[in-house]
Length: 259
Image (cartoon, rainbow, N blue to C red; front, side, top):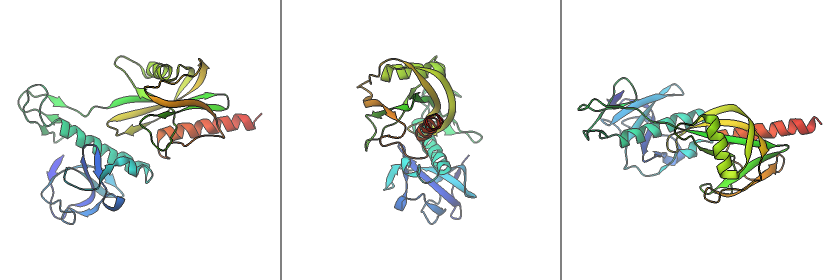
């Protein structure tokens, strides 16, 4: 799956390092390997976009390396494909040497994997499952501002699944830990690959079952119940968090207008 580029190899170029991607002039580069001075470099084809190959190159010396978040408002499919490249680049960078015997590894030619020629260990990209839950209480939705979020964005609660947990158990635990709220009627909505750094967001909606809201100050700046027609700054469109909020708002509006 890895090959050395020729001058006339053409397509989209995901040039990534340490979770960042190169976006000259704010756009993903397109054109020939010669045009972008990529000839003779090693590359992986990670898919196609608009009928052209998309190539992944691990390279650290480019300027204007930015977060792939900049593409989330452009197109969901493009964000997902470039995010895949960013995650694969980090996988290969962190698996240069075998964790068992220390020998240098090489990329498999048939699948996304790194292989050790000495002890025959085979490593695959690991994905960390996360739950994200929109909680409704009548005509209100529970939203919180996380410490890592900027610009006053409020979103629904989320967290990583721990070893030995089901998704349902993780949802109940995370909500309780972050808000002291109990939930019921948990139902699956959708999922979204999330390359920060290698997560899979599994989205649910739930109803409030009890408990007095008390946010965890280690994780959250604040949290509150917000009426569906009076919401704070929300996550950007294209995120599964925004979809959960919009779906909850639609349910609240439908029930309120139907009374």
